[in-house]
Length: 412
Image (cartoon, rainbow, N blue to C red; front, side, top):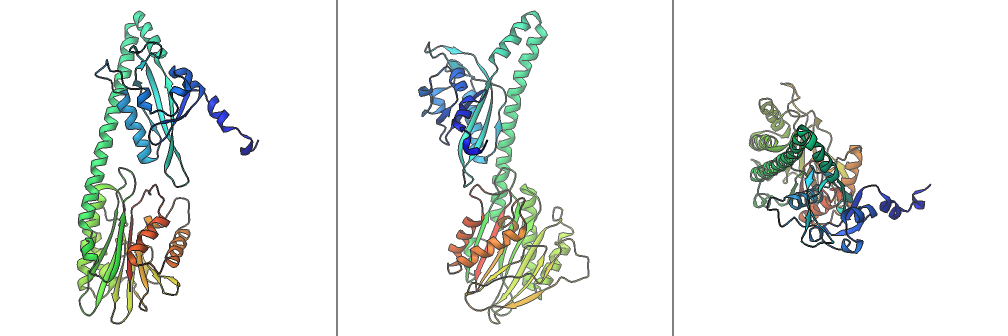
């Protein structure tokens, strides 16, 4: 049987167990027959109505938490695009035949996202299994066996405690992410600093998820001697506050080294020696370019980082990959790092970035590089600020990625 021959609406209605489809506004979009029977409501009493208008908390129970717990789970699915299995819930339901009378009910809910073509959550599959009879049966058995009743009560209590603990962990992770983002923002150059460097644009997009703040960074510095600037990006392996802290140390060290180094290779040599003594800097990567506007040259060196891109006014793109070396802490002293030089004409665009912009799971990196080159070529006439936004829009999934992405665009 082909997909075209399958009546998915009939399949949905025949699913075993209570299943409902909720919109991102938490309104019932559809319910299956089992949900209608199990909820004791007519289909027209459900579809088109907000879930908590139909099933509010029991107003006679000040300790009721079912609605709050379900709401938190549904919003987690919307925010993360990931399935969320809830602990056993007591969620009382008003008897539809006797308004004002509430029945003690127990449920085991699971909420899962349905993603649209753009990666955003368009529906939530809300599946619930009622376990009220199981709880009551074990309670009746507890009349003959007091130990069974005690164990049942402990099971429910532990489920509630587990859910509360998970919620505290989520809140702690969220706070850590906020602190890491604030720390990262404080350590990266401010927009007003970047604006001094000709026509330049910078962008930073954090990873999605509470624990996925990473260590990507960028820097633009004025160099001594002539009309020159240094432009760099780097990437620290790891997540959270530790990665953000290491990022700050390496960025500051490279910024200082670039101001006194004879070239980008020497600057990375100094940074590599420093990375050896920084915990958490293992396998960190960086690329730096020295731009000389008087000589119209770019000198560059890379420590295990994806190559910068040069986009010529006529649309030709070139990856600066003739001076690529190992990550910062992997080169033994005293072997110097490679360095290369290329010329440019006015109107050329230099682009530096981190791997979060181009890499995708189960995809060769060359595909990401080609995607970046194509976007830059098509939109090369845009000013740097507009071009930066366009590149992010085209290359990053709308739902975000699991890795940070930094981008620097300089119009030469």
